[in-house]
Length: 307
Ligand code: AMP
Image 1 (spheres, rainbow, N blue to C red):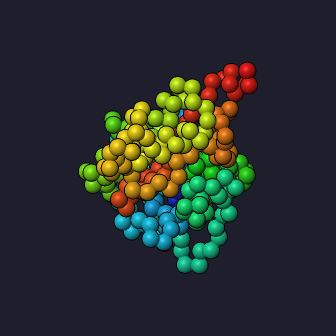
Image 2 (image 1 turned 135 degrees about the vertical axis):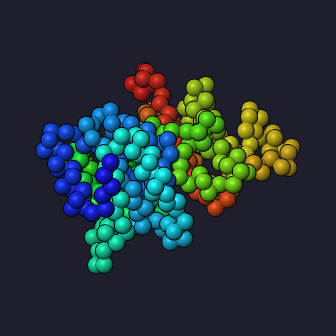
Image 3 (image 1 turned 90 degrees about the vertical axis):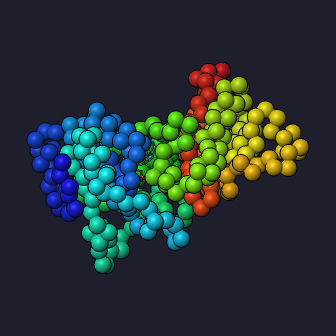
């Protein structure tokens, strides 16, 4: 397995594979790898002859006061994991190589970036699309694999690839979760034991919404209320009753909900009822850690066809 630091070497490496007739898959990451990342490597390995992973903590997608400097970096451990997964190369450029003095070109992200994460992290997607485009320029691959854990990011990258005729197939992978439901994230390591318990409210809220859809609930407002109550630490059938009678109800909740919404799964635009594929998206803070999670909610085919 090669470890490449230079964009020119990376480009030559990819072209030499493609000249040999091999298809190349790319898995961009910020490192501190977990099973979620490795599942994307496995998808790429199934679809492509050669898989390259990137490890780069991209400064332009972090806002002021976010965790750029604190973000975990563990190159040796990550390299071992990727070697075992059979990647042929890691591209791990330095910050100075990606953003040398005088760097000033940024990509204006697509419209779908303006809502949700875009409102809470104003320049985040500008940094994401710029770095992903740079990675695509350094590694002109056939396919690139992204996780649905970052649902809006996946949609933003799909739109960017389409709008800018990138010619790389964007492939998506399922969310990988811990056995108790917590979506795997490099940021989970920031959580204390008690915060980790409260972080479970996110996946529980999504499961509660999914259950309600299974029981026939189609009103988005009602689904959002179910998620909100769950995030506040009020769960079970009689959530409102417990809120009235138990003064401690809610202490097991998250500390702040940025959003807990059900929106159109393709456009991320608001919906009134589940008459088309939808996605429940949550961003919430537990202690000082900001977590995101989501769940696709699909109505039955006959409902979508208006029967
Ligand atoms: P990151 O290193 O957080 O920038 O993530 C790199 C890629 O891994 C992105 O495409 C993420 O969506 C994906 N990813 C992160 N966590 C998970 C997860 N739990 N399951 C699946 N994919 C994930």
